[in-house]
Length: 423
Image (cartoon, rainbow, N blue to C red; front, side, top):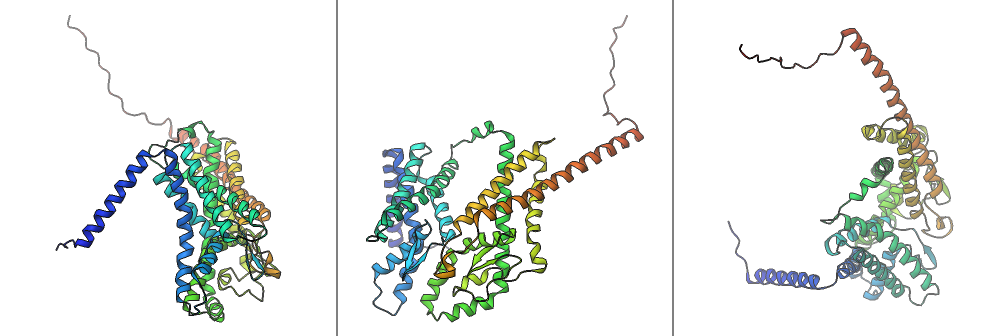
């Protein structure tokens, strides 16, 4: 059964084809940096649209006709700028806690757009980073025009945008066809192995934190629902609240990672960890009920899970660690990288989400980094020592087996014959 194309569909297809060809011709004729600038501009606008469109929909559904499109757009822009470290003041209450989920989505979009539109050159890469940071800075000046510290907010947003854009654009350009990574051969094997171990450890710890957060969310689903119902918002407000809280899911994953290591996090004036429960009086934020609310007992041994993860990573890639004492250097580099990554993420996941005891919430970056690195290092070194000991035990056993059974059999060789001349 075939579907006949309607005149409207044919016209739409022809228009899309014509626009695609026009864009391709313009890109071919334009300098190489133009594609990079377009990639940076699109990434900023698309990530802003992720917040802008839901806020517009929620505003349109609100019965209060006094909410204008300009007000809703300004609110959405300020929420978006939280992902770049721009503080947001609501009724005199400062909010600085960054929605790391939005930051991660923006980095992914920037990498994909750089891969698609930017040329694989340094100039195009710099143009992408500059266009992205300039768009973020311009949006900051518009959203916070008339505020005394507009310039400092804009400068901070630009710095955040540059730090976010550089690795994202670099990754996008490296994934382009024709981009080679032959320079990796000049990097010492110990460093390459350390980067591999550090990446695996960081990914594993984040996965553990996500699992803890999901299990805790399911276990406290009733408290979660009661907290959301207690706010008394309508359907549109509830949808907007759920969307905004979803952007903070990755932030809470970092909190869960710090909880696993034993470093914990600050919330409502209480240092919460696997040995210390959540405060008795929780803030009126339903998403916070997703955090681990049980503590003590066997949960106090949660740092052991991080140690086991470090051991599993070493066992999984033991064939690439090399021999002798060189694996210790590789493990050291990997542990330092993993601890640094967790510390940086913990620093970004720390901020203010309200007045009073909520003015400083989240994990302590230095404590989380040191504990995570120490636990990963302990597990990794123990696993390496056991592997080394078993290897030494296995070698004499194998040699003893050979001595009892005699020399190993040699492979069959053809019988050599000589052809003698007749005579």
